[in-house]
Amino acid sequence: MKTAFVSGATSGIGEATVRTLVASGWRCVATGRRGERLDALVEELGADKVHPAVFDVRDEAAMDAAIEALPGDFAKVDLLVNNAGLAKGLSAAQDADLADWQTMIDTNVTAMVKLTRKLLPGLIERRGAIIAIGSVAGSYIYPGGNVYAGSKAFANHFTLALRADLHGTGVRVTSIEPGMVETEFTKVRTGSQQASDDLYRGSDPMTGQDIADTIRWIAELPPHLNINRLELMPVNQDFAGFRVHRED
Image (cartoon, rainbow, N blue to C red; front, side, top):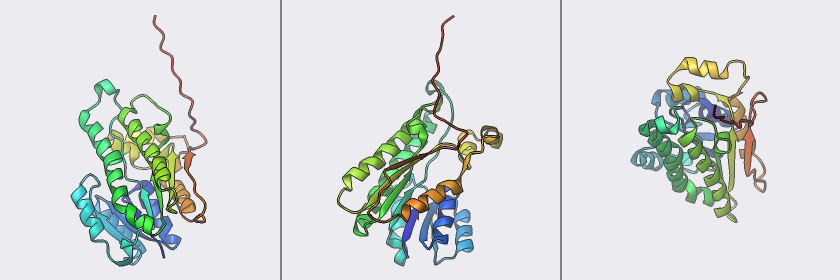
């Protein structure tokens, strides 16, 4: 049985990924800040299949302690799923809250880099895999995306750079770059359930389960096959968005 380390497993894509991988025969280290949600996953799926690691990814000392405390086979990580991430605010750059910017950088960039570096030796030893959840926002810019889009461009390209650095190690690396996925993402970003409902209404968006199924498919491909990057959107979303401002 192989072990996956899934960051941001208390909701959305991460939570669905833990359920999907366990159903496919994996054991999972599930991380997140909300311990009660991780405990519910353990109760649902079994303590032999899920180990809860409660910490904020922005807290490096807590991250170190959680990794150090991994028991038995849970410490032998074969797959890292870099899923933890968020967006805060939709204001134009000139009106944005610097605290929101810092939160996104600390979570989407700094924490991902640190977690990856800490688990890399074991992943190389076991010829494992890294799957990162980037975003189409890293490729297609939209108003108010500013630091979120920049952080996801970093995530996308950092993951591809890992692929180059890990050449010859047998470690597979994939950047998954989704478009609209209906999770708690927009509620967290805006602080409003209504804003989330309005965004996704009538659009038939992707779900966390859609992305989890994609993660499982990639993770279980033959070890000689690497998916470098994979961009997914719901059929009702596309990447056209050029604007023209005209002076009167």
